[in-house]
Image 1 (tube, rainbow, N blue to C red):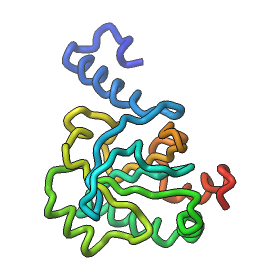
Image 2: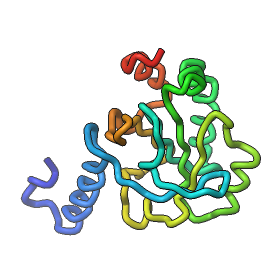
Image 3: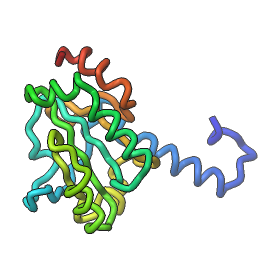
Image 4: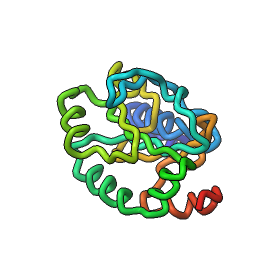
Length: 168
């Protein structure tokens, strides 16, 4: 509605248009963009190479306090742990910033062995603004085709979505 306001200054209109365009990315039902991933074992592949009926894509920074809090919270989710252990879903953490040493320390000290851990080593996520990542942590629930089921999945709703998908 703000964009319809005739007296809106041009600079604010440009800002609102930019924010609106970001918000429109990765909407439910859309395919997410592919990107290259460096994995914890030093192999490389793309997001679309991951085979799984369902996937939680978790964008995070290892030193972000909110990311740490969410990681700790979802690590205790028994429903999610069981679904991962039974091969019904995969959880992939993605670090998309530039500090490789930070990511490697995370792998050594904080990485949950149930999850797959990757790094956008080419930095395409940020440079090309592939995802709506205005804030982190940010979770996407995807189907096997990498189509968005839920954008900005709250950590405390993971079990609800696992039930809706008949994974429990």
